[in-house]
Length: 148
Image 1 (tube, rainbow, N blue to C red):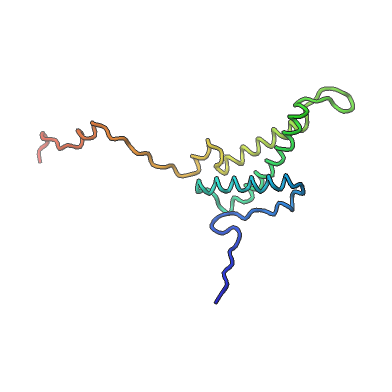
Image 2 (image 1 turned 45 degrees about the vertical axis):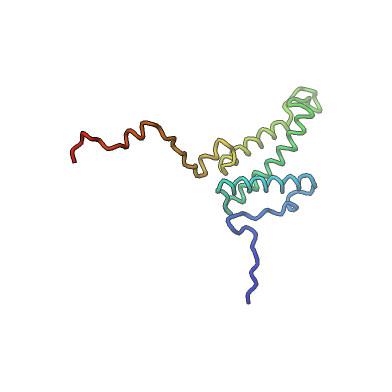
């Protein structure tokens, strides 16, 4: 008798990365795992998840964590700060990074079909049920003027 062992990533689901290889902060580890689960569940429900999407999903998770760090700093300190040495107003580097991470996340969400706008383009559309109208009955009746 052969033992069958399940393999991570079976059933078209990409295996979740070992986030400890990338992050050491407990909150980042929790956010990475939570975000991975949200994305893969959403894609599975839409029927668009595949093992080949694993790296794109991983990049999306990484950009979300970068975004969260940078957006928090930009929210606390503002989009414009004073340069440390000169005191001249400048864009907060964290604000710039958060905008770039947001752009990257939007692009990846579009590719993966996660954003509501793009979801319809990558998943199968459910057929619409046509409402019956009185004219349908009239058009379906046999035509007495037509010769057989």
